[in-house]
View 1: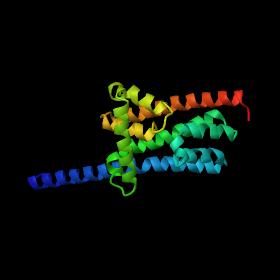
View 2: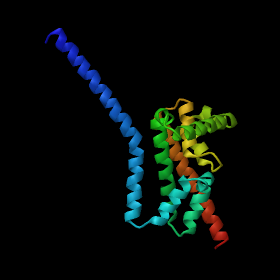
View 3: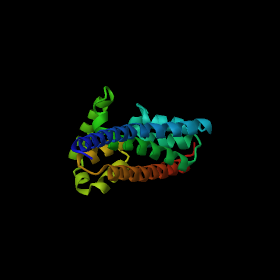
View 4: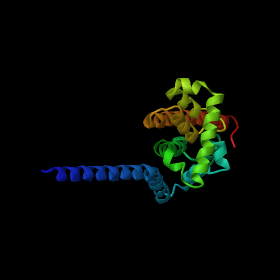
Length: 200
């Protein structure tokens, strides 16, 4: 093999590497949408539309501003199984935070979506200023931040905070998922307790 062949082989490897990185980036961008689409299709096919409605109300404004404090009591009020409601909310949190930890730098350049993400990043900085313990505790701090059912303590902000403080994507995603589970269980117990005390 002569020098020219070696150089061509090197160019071939670089080209393949760039293509591979492009495919990885595209997979990371579209995978959360694909996962959400599969779950949406399963909800439609199983005629579990009430659960889909709860998930949509949790995801889209204005009810999304109230987060799980709104969505879980809504699901219980519709007669849904408490574990199904918790699973649905945790899924939305896990899927949206997966998109954020994988695609923050790319998503921030998309028109309209980028503006929303920049606003969320500003909220992330404000949250770090308000709750400096998040930075010190890192993983546990993000999990607790997401778990506490206050306005603005959602999975997307939690994922952005993980990015701001330099946590690895998978650690951030796991912290957000654990925080979501803890927060959902807490709100579900509270909502169920209120329902037992004040039956409607």
